[in-house]
Image: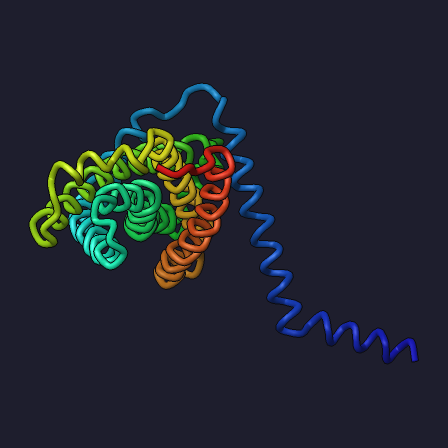
Length: 273
């Protein structure tokens, strides 16, 4: 009887489901350790500022054009949808305020995060992954170089800075695009559109959006660095790590966005105009 029980346990331990669960838990633990290592590297001296500048410039060059191109249709689609809805409800005077709130609160940080994750995070992952399979990372560690402090932290900070700047760009371009489409295509009034900003849009909305962009940029940089440094299996493994970076970043972004939005509404209760 005891032998059959032990045999059943060995079979259960070798089952694909249990193996996947163990691998998932191990991966979560490794990722948490990686995040803690980055946090421990923050207060250390000799921050690699030149690497930060290079990476910020590189990330901005990668995502600035797609972000600018996405911002215009984003503002246009939001303005068209909200304009059509407010016309049905007979509240055309709130079209401007509703469009601005939608872009500032959610549209701008989410669009920035998705573009930064899809382009910037994958670029960070590919860079680290290529270095990993060429054994450059192992050579640096043998030489006593702290890869986290020397290379990962500057990239995370660069991603955060670029995310905040791009969020501002998306907000400005999106609001301008929404204004043009609302006034020119839907026959809205320019003065009413501008005056309605203060009805619903507030300064905390702006700061909330920038904080979201900052957090989303950090997430994209951390996930891209983690997946790149843990890439294996040659070029094919690097490509798989890049795909996993995009998927994992998207999942984390939407999850964190839910909690940030919930916290924002708890701290700044919404009141009627």
